[in-house]
Length: 219
Ligand SMILES: [Zn+2]
Image 1 (cartoon, rainbow, N blue to C red):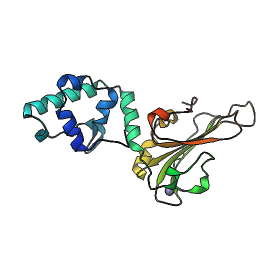
Image 2: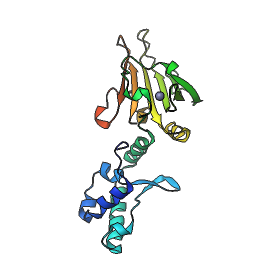
Image 3: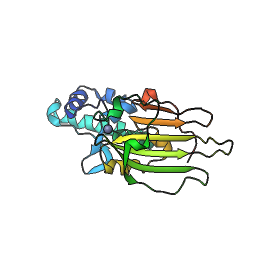
Image 4: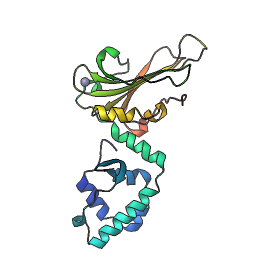
């Protein structure tokens, strides 16, 4: 989605070929893929279509109307998830993108740019969020670290998520999301140390199909 986004022209050509029935039958993912944040109103989604691509002004109006109705049927939850997907960027400039990170991601690899200090979720869980910059390039990463205290043994499970972002504003937006929602951001580095494991597991989650270990506690 984020990484193979259609251009504005491709969207116009695609939609101009769809019948009204086909628009009605688009899946949630498909309708979200051809929508985009409205200029000046980034919280609202709309369709940047242009009449010249369509057979007639009437055809254009009907298509816009049908798209609006279809978008209106997408759940608020699904729209939030989609916004989250739009915030992560593909960090092709960064060595981390093509490195084997299975042995882990050291905090010394990053410079701390901004700290999102906030109260802990509960008395037992420790959470930290920050905006990090790669030491080797200009890539920014929104980072969340969570420790769940289970009182069962010395090794409490910890989870780290690194989401590459384009700028500080997008990192601020990510900070509005819950820990559970952040697990839907892609691409991201997921770095888990489950309580009963000898070692940590770090990996890139690059598309929906790769969703692996999930934070299953928390708010
Ligand atoms: Zn880098």
